[in-house]
Amino acid sequence: MTTDIKNKMQIRKAIFKQSASNIKECPKPTLPEFAFIGRSNVGKSSLINMLCNNNKLAKTSATPGKTQLINHFLINEHWYLVDLPGYGFAKTSKTSRTKFETIIYDYCKKRDTLVCLFVLIDSRLPLQKIDLEFMQWCGETDIPFSIIYTKADKNSKSHLAQNVKNIEKELLSHWEELPNSFISSAETKTGKDDILEFIDYLIKENNVN
Ligand code: GTP
Ligand code: MG
Picture 1 (cartoon, rainbow, N blue to C red):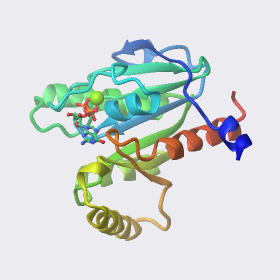
Picture 2 (picture 1 turned 90 degrees about the vertical axis):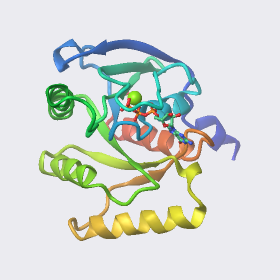
Picture 3 (picture 1 turned 45 degrees about the horizontal axis):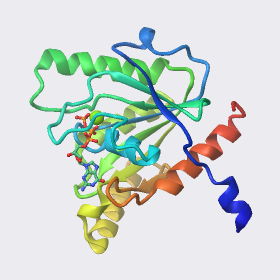
Picture 4 (picture 1 turned 180 degrees about the vertical axis):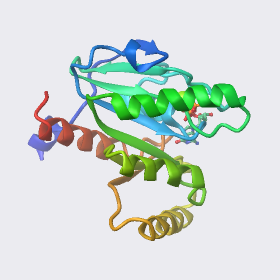
């Protein structure tokens, strides 16, 4: 038990490294990274802050469309968490929507050091077409991804369980198996240990640390 606690992945240091408006401006691809993607307002930036115990690290907002650049956060001096702009924000003009989508798709496809993309899905809603399409694109493009259901605190336990079950059922009508998934809340810190443990496992498995 003591050993478990000692070996548990802890974020000791999290610093904002830089913002980039395209993949060429990103930090040199020398460290493993884990990126957060999903619809605008789903809670990507809040989740990064929750994992890092620092509510001021990534900028959050109740208004969708807050994160507009690729933001790298250097963790424990060894790996990156990456906050991405959201997709599917209806109020953005078509031009800027295309711009964000180009940034996102380019980053996901070309960033060699991306170990795992976390696709965030609002745990209160039925599976949204845009999320399904994005995950299908990840599958076709061979981009490794996991799902994180967000805002679990805004649900009753039974609604949460039923909704996740419905989403999984629908995913299984398209795919043979489900990706790894986590349930999270930036408010209550649900999912924190499991997500960090998974990242730790992937870093060790990739033997890049
Ligand atoms: P964009 O950068 O605009 O794409 O949004 P985002 O996905 O980064 O969302 P953000 O983290 O900015 O959160 C959007 C809103 O949802 C904010 O008002 C957050 O406080 C709220 N929020 C995020 N996560 C949670 C959560 O787990 N529980 C609750 N209750 N609210 C949350
Ligand atoms: Mg954001």
